[in-house]
Length: 509
Image 1: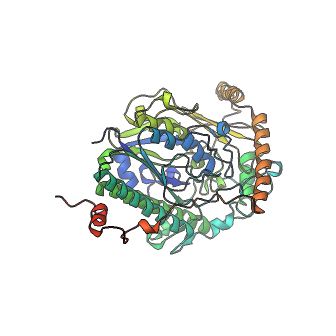
Image 2: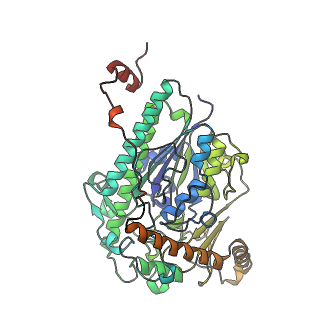
Image 3: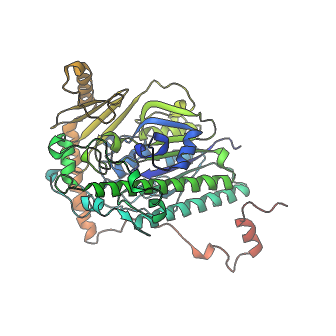
């Protein structure tokens, strides 16, 4: 076995752990994820640091909270000056590859990855910039709405299916190329992120995945609130996605959840495909596999859909680790995606001295090795659409505290109230706990200054986007390099040499 293990991160988009078999869903079929959990560590309280695609991923890549790196929304630039785990792992001797989505915004479309083998699925420019000075205006062109839910169902092809099939193919080809290079003497370990778009809405599934489930198996949301029962922030989100004034029938809700479960199984099949490729390239025993997601999906819980809030179905994520040295079991400590960068550095044998900037996370390897961890917290920040002020979350031990300056505070006992039905913030019995959280929020964040900075960047980015639309500069959407003159068999190549290079396993002498 090589001295350092490989790292394979398999990432879903908008996957709440509640809808996976290994986290307790009674109907969904996720055999490959379940198998990894059965031989590895399942983290029971893992969270995203911002319940929106790009900000969450930028925290994942950098190990830093979004307020530190100004990664506020889906059109915030991920600055090239921010070191990522891909930079650090390359410096520590790893070959690095990204296949799939990472929602990079800005001209740097690699952020330390040596190889990037697909384009992204979403725009790389400033088109999706919110406007906090008109936060209550619906953004029609690119924003979520209830029509997406109403159109849930079956299709033979969608742009999301096209994309994920490409991500799988490109990742598998890269892994075989890695094995071929290793056979030729390149012993460097690899770190790959294979990042899929499913089960993100639209909730549309191919027939073979849809047909895994019958209609009467599909469970409905457990806890639903009417618009006038929502807290102010949730009501703003509900208005923004049209859920407060475009009703859904039970049939429409069930069909969307049916398609979502189908697409969870589809994503699970990608896990199985990549694990099989590791087996076929003799790398399975050398590889730490991590399955996670950028955020969850409310899927009708509380009357909400998609993400953009800090309730459990939106903010909590699956996190499973399996591979050499990883213990079998569960870890109950709260943790989050900012913890992944120090975890990867730990796996790679690096240390804090390798860091170019301060980070906000800690290594999860002690937990993965079955040891104790004194830290039991996750920090969240939401600074995107449908709010006029930053929203903060502290998840520590049994409690979750949510704060937004113009709104009443929220405090939930997650251990005893996992559906977050009872807000304890004004309960006299929890006054001391609520006051401590409030004081911590006031000390940790300057909400007014952060809000001013966010609005300034929004104005700047909208101006820049207008100029780019008028023809200033070049598009930043990533074009994977491809040179057909060097592929397969060409006139300048020796057929026998090419055959020996690409055949795996190689023919033994």
